[in-house]
Length: 350
Ligand code: NAD
Image (cartoon, rainbow, N blue to C red; front, side, top):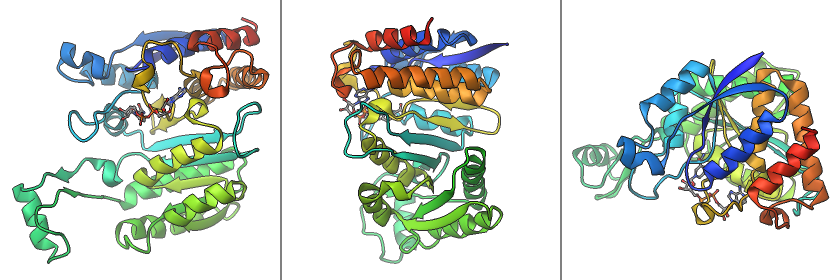
């Protein structure tokens, strides 16, 4: 079996970790024909957009993609390419397993959590109105004094449809991966209609899975609980924005963003990417940890049904981390990005 897979190296440190990831995946024995496509801040001038149509077409055609991080300007400039990819391709489920690896310095041991984040709506929908526009003035009027004059406004859509499918995804994942509990996380006490809807749909879906324990937490309490007693949690299912924030918190529990992988999954297409961003201050230095993207590759191999290769690769990664000899700066070593990848390849016996 040969796979045709789109690779989007991204920008900042993306191309460095993507190249390492590609070499490592090629050393697993799984036969992959790579289709490299360019997106991100570096191609903006060349194509007039950070997300050229050929990138989307390639992913739609191959149905599987792996990407490096892509920069999103803060406060102004183009909208997030990462969010656009997830929305355009309807990759509704963002899956972010957080697992402790021996050898990584962290305040916690034996963390094994999975964050399931809704990927297509919530405040990420990009429905925003600038201060002073006709739309924002109209919404201010409708709010009957609840919104101050001269406010910028963001809309938070939460639908029954998207909530039902993400909560179902979380329960199906729990069953498939022999997990015991799903916790829904909202702020339904305050956002009674939006988060309230997420919560009531989650309760309904949970009834269909009596074999999996179900519980609920408010997002603020969840943050504290994760810091104090992360071992109490298993699979978390959250709306988009809370899911984004909690993912980084969970990455912190296992020792940092350098080892936190992710997947964006739709009904037909899946795109794998690390949780972390483009870490632009390290661009071109061959310095950052390639592990998060390599472990995203492990998730990709599992998704493809290449279970043996996935296991072998995860074992190779965990051995390299445990030995601590050829690891990057964030894991206490001095190895370059490419050197850590070389060591993983060596462990694969390739
Ligand atoms: P970041 O994740 O790039 O970096 C945060 C911190 O983590 C930095 O201190 C960096 O040194 C460290 N770090 C990140 N990746 C690492 C790695 N592989 N190895 C070792 N250390 C690592 O977050 P940021 O600085 O907030 O964001 C930079 C840019 O990335 C922004 O434009 C942001 O929008 C974008 N971003 C993209 C994605 C994505 O492509 N999916 C995700 C998050 C952020």
